[in-house]
Length: 544
Image 1: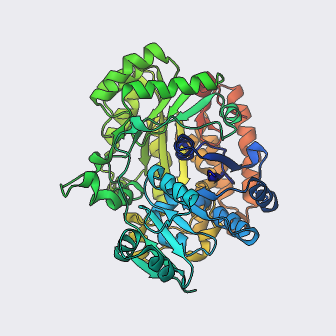
Image 2 (image 1 turned 60 degrees about the vertical axis):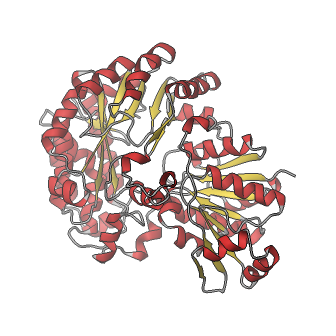
Image 3 (image 1 turned 45 degrees about the vertical axis):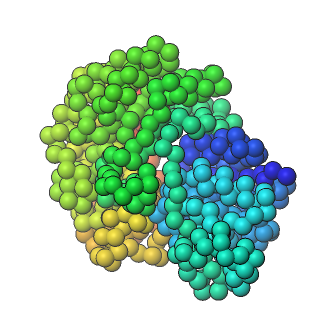
């Protein structure tokens, strides 16, 4: 009997999203003859966090495996749901995703978790499901941390003999949990070198038509994997290091750029056409590749085919050191409307020394001006609450973004990902407040760092009023008014800020100011992602 796999994906406290990872894993399992289903836990699709309902649906479906995909900010919810499921049944549970790549050993300590998948999951997940279906041992499945109940490991090794699985398992790193359970930490195996051999993503298990509607016709797609850059805050570096020794089965010296793989032009176009054929409400694509727009023969070959056979407007990522006139021209010819680049911090010293992004302000200013020259709307990614950052540094980030005249300014609160170099720095500097870890469940919330170079209340004030700092720095008719309101709210008592009492006041004033400056047609930023109001109307962004 084929094993059924139930995926569970949480979008709690954040906007509803689509997981390309779950999409391709589901498609890969279905191609292997297995049935899949998804519980997408999100208020926006009428499936809120209700553990009784989730457990009921799990028991009704009776899967052979429950698979969670977790990011660090959602891990609290994942382990909570898994705990309630384990109380109700013994169905094995596996956790994968970005958090699993960063904190695999921490995750396996959770009593409800049986397996953790490191690295790219297509091969190990299918192998695990095939083994479960056959009733075979799963102890030596590559990429997996496997929990074995106390006293059962030696029995299984004895049953399998001295060759095969036992040889692999005996040579794999292992450790014992406090309750006596054993954990086998298998090395990573090969990754999909040829992305063209992977099926197109299974969007059917999501309520994907509704996701497209909530995103006003935008569909997320991905044509590549990997990133050639080594930013200290990003999971890509430890992810690459995990594979590095076994990359392509050789001992050759390898670099981050060797980790980048792409679909060819034919299967990229086929993937896009598949989405368009199945979801006619899609009006735009967002390429969520780590870095889509780096000049290459691939991008040059894709451009005319995309324009001829797809033709939909799209958004994509680039990197400030890679973005140039050649890329801008190509993107314009393809029909690109939005190009996204990381600014990350307004202080160049923090950007360069702390984040390992040696990008001068002058390059950022040139890139954003170049994007506008070619009719591309530039979007800026930023973080606040970084290690070593001060209040003045956070305000400097807002001022730099105002200078850049970005179409969209995205700002999140820094979250140290386990396994990254910046995580190591925070640990060595005793900056992480473990008591705050489960309190932070959104990229736009508070910090897990202790007070060092900034106070928590200062971060809260900048976080809430970042949009006002942007508008106060625009040097136009609205700037002085926004600065006046910043000064007034800033002087409210700190305990009012930390209790959340000031944010509703800010929201009311924000609505008043926005209404006024829209009426006067004064350039300013609005909305969750700080969209420039005079540009956003062109692309159906919800500015309510």
